[in-house]
Image (cartoon, rainbow, N blue to C red; front, side, top):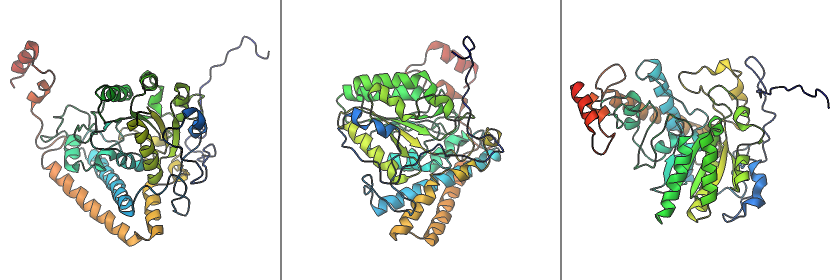
Length: 410
C-alpha cells in the first residue's frame, strides 16, 4: 500500500478564495417542476433520492410549474412579496442604525428572505418556532409590530425583553417565536422536546426547529434527530444552508454526507432539499412537512439551499474569506426579484407598482424607527430599569437576589 504508515490530516477547502472567480459548478440544479410531490404518508425509504435533489417551482421565465405549484393565490403571493420587501428594508435601516451607534449589533437576512417569510404562512396559530437569529421573517410575516422589534434591537425602555437579550434575539409566545438562544443548536433539541410534549398532551400544535449549516456540527443537532425519529415527534426540522457559517464554508460542517438533508436518512426521517430562494417552493415544502407532523406521521428534515448575500453580522467582513462578487454569481438568484418577476408574468404586478411599494414600505419602516427611537437607543433616551435584571428569573425571588437588589439600590 502506498505511503503505508504515513497519515495525512485532511481539512476541507472551499472552491474559491478571496480574489478568485466565483464557482458554483458543484451546485446541481434540477429543472423547475421536475421533482415529484409524494403523498404525506410516503414511506421515507422510497424517497431517499429527494435528499440529494432540489425542489423548485419557479422556472427561469418566472412561471410556476410542476406538482408543487398552485398552492397560493395571487393575493397570498402579493402579501408574501410585501413581507420579503419589508424584511429587506427593515434590515437596511437597522444595519444603518448600528453603523450610527444606535445599537451594538445587527444581523441581516439579505438573500434569505423567502425561507422564513414563506415558511410562516404554512403554519397555524399556536404552532411554535424555535429559531436562530436569522428568521425574523417569521415575525414580519405574522404581523408582529416592527416598533417592538426595533425596541428590542435598541434595548430601550420599551424593549419587551428589558435589555436582557442581545439585539435581534426576539421572543414572542403569541406569535409562535420561542426565545432565541445565543448558544447555537440548543434550540433544535428544545423544539423536539416541545413537540413531544404537545403529543403527550394530545394537543394539535406542532413545532419547527431551525438551524444553520454550520451549527449542524453541534451535538444537539444529532441528539434532536435521535429523539425526533424515535418518538415520531410532530416537528419540522429546518436546516438553512446559506453556504457559509460565520467564516467557514458549508463543507466543514457537512463532512462527507453530500448534503445536509442526507443527515436525516440515517435516522429514517424523510429528508428533502428545496430552493430556498423560491417563495412558492419553500411554502409548498413547508406545508407538506407540517401536514405530515399534524397527521402523526412524525418529523421531516428540510434543507433550504440559499445564499447569505451579506455579512454574517455587523461584526463580520466576508471579503476576508470569499470573493466579493460571489453573491452575484449565486445560481438560484434573488428571492424578491424572482417572486416579483413571477407576479409580473402573471399580470398582477408591474415594475411601477413594485417601485411604488418600495417607497411605501420604506416610509412605513422609517415611521416605525422614529417611534422606536423616541423610546431610546443604545446611547440616548430611556433605558430599562436596573431593577428588571432581578425580575422574571425565579417564580419567587430567593433571598440572595433580594439582597443584591437592595445593594444595587433598586
